[in-house]
Length: 354
Image 1 (cartoon, rainbow, N blue to C red):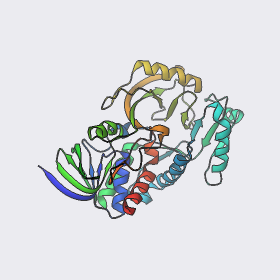
Image 2: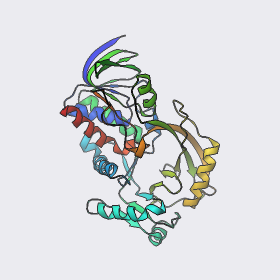
Image 3: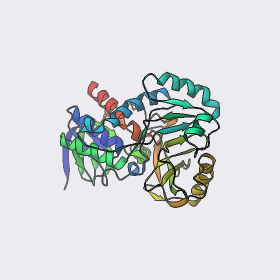
Image 4: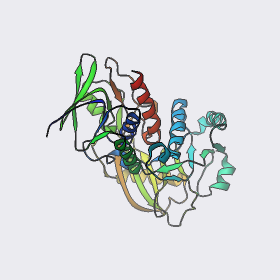
């Protein structure tokens, strides 16, 4: 059946950024359609680690993350739908040459955020299972949420407020009129709108190229291994990002851990695939440098999926040169989940202001 509907805003892609933004738009009174080629929350969002934390080396991202962090802590009050926040704490291991700058940034954040710098001795005392010669940033109130659960919660909240979701609707082509995007042609017909948001995650670069829109984005493979330590690890093990060993991860379930590695592989494959043993070997080797429980840990599975990256991880350009009424919601280099509520707030404000 062909559909032709007119909306204030059409959002293409029902991952975390699309869902959060559809909710925010609807809360602000805009008639919103959310299009998804498959089922919501089943793309790269479903394979995100879902870590929610604040500190970034980039001040702009830190500001965004601090606002989003507060939103997630009070998620049900903000959306009317519950979602679980698991507080594990979070560690960031910067490169040694950045330590002075990072310590100063932590000092600046301390008046408004529960954050501290742990030196080598403090790390050894608090987290004896973690090797740390240089020190690390510690956020004790950080943690993670289940990305698919949160995305579905945003969609439920958005539809309750009047948004319309169209699963099984693949976007083919953006419709232009002079210097404006006025709609999108899809597998279910044409949707017209005053504003169109593209939130297709790692599929965004190819979609923009098919529509002859220049961009600075790329898709990059991330592999995640599931590890089961031989001996149970203390319950207070935090989530982490490790810029020394190029790793990220968090506690998982049944005493397991997710150990992630951004492979720097840009040969895009649409979808999720089993992990590569080559990348698992690299992840295991680097993991042993940081965590004593990695050595001898059982490999319980792995997957590789893609995310959308941009220079400095700050997302796509807010305005597309020569094209009004189009916004791109992606490019946060694996960090879109933690930023989603604030990205949604900012883009909604921009649309309302015109």
